[in-house]
Length: 186
View 1 (cartoon, rainbow, N blue to C red):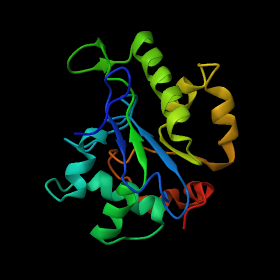
View 2 (view 1 turned 60 degrees about the horizontal axis):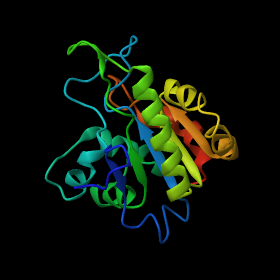
View 3 (view 1 turned 60 degrees about the vertical axis):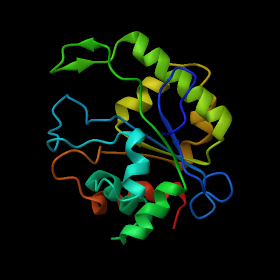
View 4 (view 1 turned 45 degrees about the vertical axis):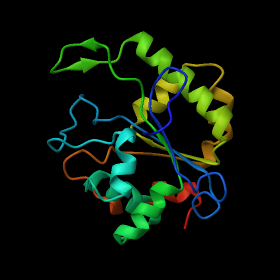
């Protein structure tokens, strides 16, 4: 079971994050569990739920999106062991689950975004990341609405990569290589 944020949200902290990170970089990964609803077509049953990270690492759950993220950052097709080591070396979280909308079309409420911003502020304070990987520009826009987060986001601007969610049909890690070079990994 992964540790939780103060508001009860799951947080994955890889066991190698604190000592060395990934190639000496402490990377924070932020992704919606599912791709945005606004026009993105999701692969059925696919998303990035940080509470499933340990299952991916121990092999009890194969998961294409976890593999795609690792390959994206590593910059190459990577063996399963390389992908597992990637996830052991990063911090990963999702926004608060949407409490608005309907069961078929959930939507984030202002309160959900407030919780997400407060949690991320706590994660930045505790984890002090060197780089930030965000899956979806809307996430970064929402984080910037919290004045206390803006200086932290600005400090990481040169090492922040914002890319398409890997759960979207047709996602290819090769298409986003230029953007992730900003992270300074590999």
